Image (cartoon, rainbow over all chains, first blue to last red; front, side, top):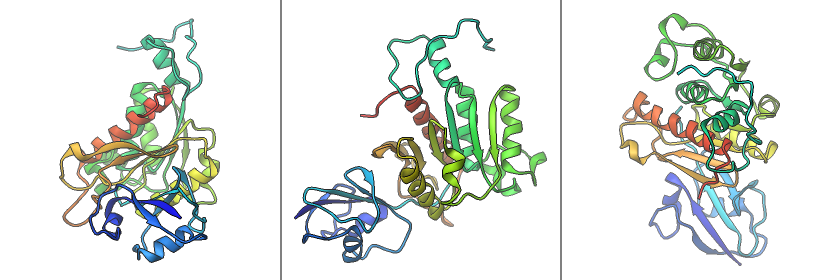
Length: 79
Length: 219
């Protein structure tokens, strides 16, 4: 199944094409893949992050579906 | 100019709903005066956001912070030397009441957790995330997006250092979540929090709150 994956800020360095940037890339995933699987496969650093699927907040154990748009945003300190 | 209460209260509709346009200043200010905003964190972002909202006409604020004013806060936060050692919520409320004695301020001097936060911010028309640590920002966003999915949240990430102020933008990151900042500039030895850039981010946050309260939908 095809899922679009966008990684924000420093996480964009983990996109497999190595090109960075916050725009989404199309991933070909097997049925039953969860957000946590994608995070593990991309070896995202263990830092605070917020997950969205189809523009809505989602848990990392959410199962992805054909056509979903996954976005992961890591807040950085400062206030 | 000092605004005096008028006998005629213009119909301003509910916060967040579109205003018929063009509207008079009275209607815009009445809408803001009827609104309530929760500010989580009263440091460099939150203290300045609170003052800007109040000056713009928002008169009901929930101010949340566990900390006390320290000397090191004075380089960017809306506090004064004679307030060092006092709870930030209390010191900020004192300053805000010098601007608007009739402001309705709810002070929460607590370190919020995922278990307590929703109760404190329930009833606000918009929530402002204005804490400092990345872990706390994530907790505030996770908790509010799950617990109060109908309440918009304005958050900030990436405001440290002396990079161009023009890199600080406001974006709708997801449904109901508005993100201010350059997304990247983490606080570090070479990237301190400078009043000018923190204020730019605070102004973006306050202005996004005002747009949300006036029912403006971001493109």
